Image (tube, rainbow over all chains, first blue to last red; front, side, top):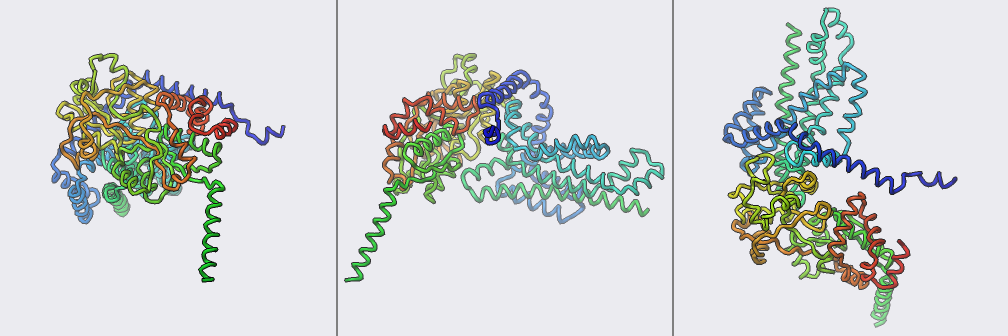
Length: 297
Length: 334
């Protein structure tokens, strides 16, 4: 009897092993039978990623720099930021990281856009229904805490190494903040304001697009910031499953203790993150200002 | 004079106490538990035998090749690297051996091992005309790359590994770019394993770098290809191929260099004669190592579980490594 309390009544070693084996072999036969179908399902994304990377790589570098500077200006309306991005990209190219930076930029811009375009609607949906929220929250928790290779190994067995698993890894990790903060932002909108909107006879769509989302923008853009930062932080992990880009030299540097190489490529990742973020944040600020202006009209 | 006498007595006393503490079996050290299965199995077997058989205290420290070697070389810790693949670090290692900082306890702790270029057995079944690497190089169309189907994919060695440079060099030496191949960097061991096992599971063609003894080679019966050219001398290999294309632009085609795996120890361990004589006899036959690795993989066993399975299953191998007395103790502890 005492033994029962001292030792946890655990599953026997053999049955535990068999249990694990059953799961493993079930997954293996699943991947053997359905791998190719699932792979072809992701093919359009792969083609798009390849096309976009080739586009970035084959465009002459001055044009890329000009386009980036132009986007910076369009997004943030700031000459300083445009100039800063021109300088950064020139320096990156000068230090021999142009190709890797373009590959990383291709993957990350697609990943960020994907995360934002899935994340914001999901956040809105969560904000409107407590049931959805109670269902999605734990999934987000899993996405953020589960050790990356735990889900990457099955993904590798299904899809092989390359861009698509890389994209999946980045999005799984980077999407939760935008979903969470959109949800939070909309839930935090003042009830009185919503009542006022109702009193003016706003329908559901008007209430969402005209009141809730604009008032939630500061939170949503904090989410966008976090998503971008996390996406770029995942560049190195993506490289661990065969995605070309700045992550590869970083891995090389870590393995061989090349301090300078690691630092240079690491800082290039940081620079990309900052430029991406400032452009979107500047855009977000202008959006919010515009709303304020409308209010005064 | 008196002073001298006192100090002599003091010093001899000091020495006596030091030597007595040595004789009281001061066998306590750190051993590198490297992050691939055969090395972790070996480290755990060593730990078990040395602790149970010789009363040592062995602490396992995780680490990869380069990081482990550098800390051993610079700081003298961990004290033992059971399975160090020395090709990647040969220059630094030879210097350390010459200067007497590190010592080789045994060359080749696993027999029949090696690196090279492998294909899945299904590929050889379908194309029996593939006799050497040279034959494969003519058919990039059979190994289409995921991101550019018009090219053949050769899966190289993960970024930052010593073999990455050698693979890049051989890629140039065999003019593989011209023949329609691209060199894919799998990024990590997980990436390399994933791409190989995915292909082997589905019976697809796969051509890339790998090494044995490994559970995946045992499990999927991966086939090592003959290079079709002889080893073109250590000058070409060490002076060019291993340095990579940034340092040496014109490597000659060559078979892979013979892999040298050693158990490397620091000078502290060299003093421990019993431990050294154990390391000196400890050779795992390659086929048994492959079996062990498949066992570990199938049972999802950790290094420690694997070590116990090995000690239980193959006593005829390890009893020859140690004294009878120690063997009795180990058997009792199992």
